[in-house]
Length: 302
Image (tube, rainbow, N blue to C red; front, side, top):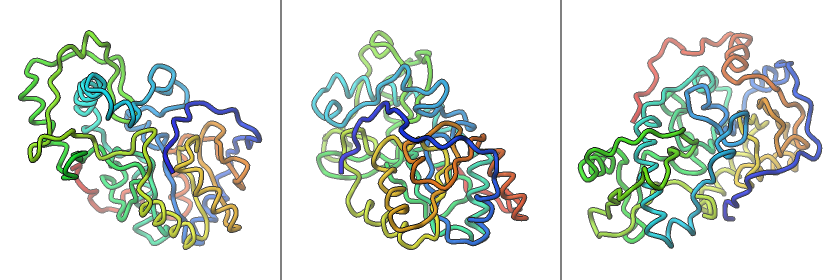
């Protein structure tokens, strides 16, 4: 299934935002909870979401796979914006929400973590076995030979090839793309694969591109194994994440959502907590008697 560029939707049966965290506490105390996270969990790390208040879709349309592969001009625009965005994006640090999820995992309360985000912040906070549904900006893939490499190496090459490229962006988006005008992009130099000269693409699923089938099936298996699904900071607008919520509901497993705004999955949920994620998850951890940082060092950023 391709990730359709569904940019807007109208809530059909939104749940009123509750302030009662007890259902979340009860679900986690039972264990076996599968976390599904979206861009909203990273906003407190300085990365905006797509659709919340001030969301990037009000000013920015994400690159589609079709546009990226068909147009050299589109690739120049993308890589100029992404290269600049990476400087900020790559410095982002996990927030209290990420650390709380890591604490839940350390104490055996989770059956897994699926994230729609490409920022690596769950892993940086210490979560293990995270399924990156849409890939990660930390990696680059060649569309010709399939070779994968570290983003930091491409960033170094781009710095050398574009000395003096220092435009000021209007903002940074959840996909790591900076807002630049065509004039600011200028004649930015795009680099080919160092092995075969092919087109390089970040190892993420663009809009209009399919999530790898084996990854989807792995996520479906995680839903089957879970006792409940906890959605954190996702509007569930795109089907790539919503399908797992629908699956859980069809299997009779409780779906709980922590998101300030209504979501496309509200009608499948037993509750939606309309509170900020960092404070909510820290409160939940406190009620469960779990130290959020666990006294253990988090993983270093890649």
